[in-house]
Each structure stands twice: as C-alpha cells, then as structure tokens.
Amino acid sequence: MKLPYKNIYDVLKLNRYVTIIVTVTALLSSVFSGILVFTMYQKALDNAFAINTDGAIIPLKLISQRENLNVEALAHLELFHRNFYGIDASNYESNLEKALWLGNSSVDNVYRQKKADGVYNRLLQYSLMQKIISVNSEVNLEKEPYPFTTVTIFEINRGTTVDRYELTTTGNLIPVDRNYPTNTHGLLISNYFEKSLKKIDNRN
Image (tube, rainbow, N blue to C red; front, side, top):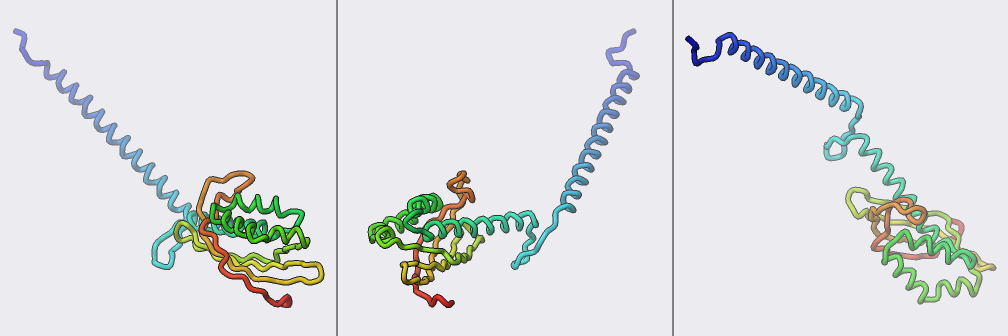
C-alpha cells in the first residue's frame, strides 16, 4: 500500500541539506564580518589622531587638509595684493586684470573707485612705481566664508622721492572651482575693503 507521505529518508535528507547550507552561510558571514572588522581596525591604526582645544578628536588627515588650505589662502592673498598694488605704467593693466580674477564684485568696485579717482591716470602721467615690500595676512579657517586681514607695505617711487605706506585690507575668502591659470587656488575674495592707509617711516 502506498503511503500519502514522503519517504522519511527523503525528508531527513532534505533537512540535512538545509542544515548544511545554513551552517555554511553562517560561517561565511562570520568570516566576512571578521575580515571587515580587521580591515577597519588596520585603517584605524594607519591613521593618527589629534585633539583640538575643545577635546574633539580630529584625524591628522583633516589637519593636513586644513594646513594646505591655509597655505593656499595665504598664497592667494599675496598674489592678489602684489598684482593689485604692485603696479607701474608698464604693467598696471595686465596686473589689474590678473587681480580682478581673484575677487568678486567687491574687488571690482574698489578698482572702479580708484579709476574714477584718477589713480591710474596719475600713475601714467607721473610715471609712478608702486613696489610691494611685504604682504602679511591672517585668515580664520574655522568657518566659511573665511575672514582675513592683510597688511601690505608698499613704496611709491616718484622719481625724486620714495614714500612708504602701510595698507590694511579686510574681506572674506570663498571656496570656488579652480580655474587655470586665472584662479589656481580655487578661492575668491569677497567683501573686500581697504580699511586703512598710513604713511610710515622708510627706515621701519
């Protein structure tokens, strides 16, 4: 007589296969998880960390990026100030064009105001030379946009006399896409303002 149920040996055989598959799957999952944890642990060992002033842990990679940004920000500001203020009758047009690429409309407004005041006409008329002595900037990279203050020392050579001035400027730096060769640092000066200008002793 044929029973309506499967042969008990077939059932046991099927159960055995299911058990083996489940066991193998669990074993493979455990091995994969172990490898993943080990890899993460190795990466953690390969990265050093530092603690900032408020006790937060910062990867040194991030610190390195911040240091690189600081270097680029200072280089950007120096390039701008040397082009914008280090001018004479022979190079002022090309230098100003380079400088205007490094800032937004706030820089353009300062340029237009100087032009309206006849600064560049006097430069041509009297063959004046503005020579940059030094450019020293401080930039706060804690949050965007990055505020800066720059002190530029420059001389104006009037032929018979040479006067030295100290110019303090302020503004913000905004990260933008790099544009070669017009803006290689990927930063843009905004809210640009000539805060103060004073004549100083040439012997300083």
